[in-house]
Each structure stands twice: as structure tokens, then as C-alpha cells.
Image (cartoon, rainbow, N blue to C red; front, side, top):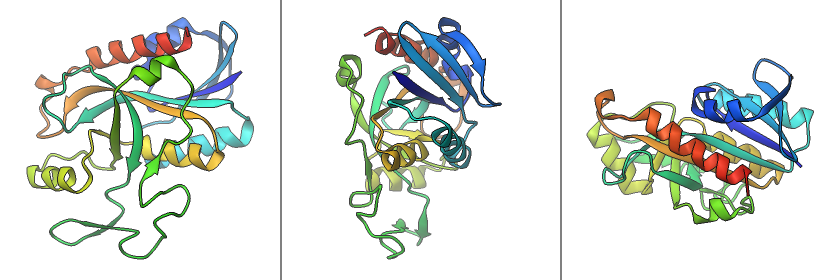
Length: 225
């Protein structure tokens, strides 16, 4: 079984990389590993949608995968969610793609630039209808995610986003991962751990080490099923 693991940075999956047996480096971002009876390619894309889309496209042109997993940390719109909480992201949106009209965003669908059910969208949302079969993943809380190019700090913008889309997590790569996997018809899952609450940037209230620790504990559980 050949699995593609995608992460924006190696830091987010550093404990995992220590566990896997390195086989060979394929290029600057893609390396091949083994673990038990699994053949695992790890793709470090760099931060952002453009980088993720390009690197995944290259990987899919090279190899045929049985499944893909996106692991990373994320911001959370729910201030009551404890830092370190691990989520299974089951839908993705691109809220910045469209027209900002002063009150809320008009999407590409609202602007009639794409059809609302054009692949990979369903009513303007990307949904994971082909999740990886995993008991561990099935038990994780399922939430809505959105992907942004800009980390939001404005209270007004954040409240507009929450009202319009009801997201739980915010990342900078998730939608690109969804887009690629849905087009490939590949079973996939995006798993993220909360490192901060979305709002004014103050890293004193972040906990990246805890998020990485909990994320990788979940990764180990998935691989050891």
C-alpha cells in the first residue's frame, strides 16, 4: 500500500519522521519511507495553497497512491476549544476567492464565474466524500475548515467569516489538498491540531508544541491500526 503524507513543514511531523525508516530522497520536497508493511511518501510542500497545489500535482504525476493524508496545525475560530484538540476536517472553503463588497464576500459562484457543483465543489463547498477507512479517524471530531492566504486578525473580518461560513479551523493549505485529492478520486483525510485561537496575533497564548505532540500521537495511532 502506497500512502502520500502531506505537510506544509517538517516541524509539524518531526516526531513521525523519526519513527519512519528513510528509504530515499526523491526530490527537495518528496522522500520515500517505510513503516511496517506501508510504503509512505512524505511531501513537505511549504506554507500556502500555491506551493501545496504545485507539489501535489508533481507527486501525483510521478506515482499512483492508494490514499493521502494531510497533517498539520491550525487556528481555531471557537475560543472554547482547548489548544491541542485534534480534528478531522471534512469540508473546505476558499473565502478569499471572490469579491469583497464591504459587508461580506461574494464567492466565485455568486459572481457566476464557476458553477456551484463544478468539480470539486458541491454548492460551493469541497466535501470529503471519500474518507480513508480508519477507526481512529472516524472517532475524531468532524469539523468545517477554511483556507486563507492571510491570517485574519481583524475582529470584524473574523465575525463576518464566522457568520457566513461557520468554520471551526483555519489553515493555509487545506483547500489545495482537498482540491487535488477530489480530482484524483483518492481516499483522503485532513487531520489538524489546534495551536491557537483565531484573533489578534499574540503567540503568548499559542501552544504549538502541544499541538504537534497531539497531532503526532494521532498519526501514530492511525499508522498502527
